[in-house]
Length: 338
Ligand code: ADE
Ligand code: ZN
Image: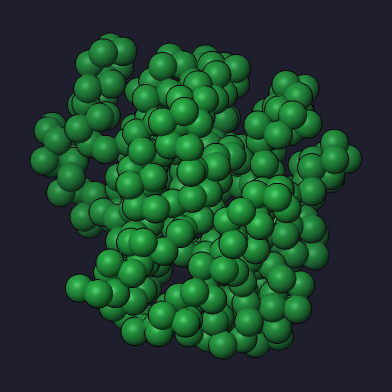
């Protein structure tokens, strides 16, 4: 209909997509075959593409999803695996009128199985160079995340290597974040890692919080880690003081509506506090998270929000403008996007 057309045409920014979350079951099986990776024999979900697709429809929680996500990413071996994966995402996003994409990746689970940081970034950067030629209206940045299920010293090792690569300084990397399991991973565990990042001059800091965990984790991430963004942050709405603070400090929430439904954070998209955030002046963007797992790229997330909330075209313009304002690109690029 008319609004679907409008939402498709709306210039969009994506701030929350994990490149490893774009591996479809079909791609997983073909990468596993190509790279001679054996998949778990004891889980019937790995019996066929359709069994895996069916399993993805009955996730019970974030951790239930992450189990599959970390197995699946272990099929990525070569730089060209990372290049193809990244380029495919970029062309899909471009087709949905994404004009600016900030892409998360999880270096640690790759590095811990012998795939170097240099291999990952070489592949992703090659995809970006190809996109600069083929998809010129799309600007692209990368954001490494520490993963919370591994010990804190491993996050320090990863960050040290990434800083020494010079990729923060040369603009290849737009910022630094954290992902993976949330419950019992209070922000105070990560103050030393974020202090190291700050000391290295990294100011674009973010963290996944308030996806499953309470508003208190979001509040403490702001004060203890000096993050400028919160990935998800949906549970911030449970604390009205925090909502005011998010608005006052222009802290952006990178919301992922379909993800929250599929991982059972909420029953339906309309149960998300998106109207509250909009009315309170909280900056937010609408994103896909792990599109190959959750059955929707960015446009499907915009459409799900429209179906749930029936925003006006003016409200959509506000959402799109705020998501440009909250992007981690240069002032010149922002002006071009606006
Ligand atoms: N890694 C990939 N997707 C994630 C999510 N939704 N939450 C936390 N970590 C993730
Ligand atoms: Zn995420």
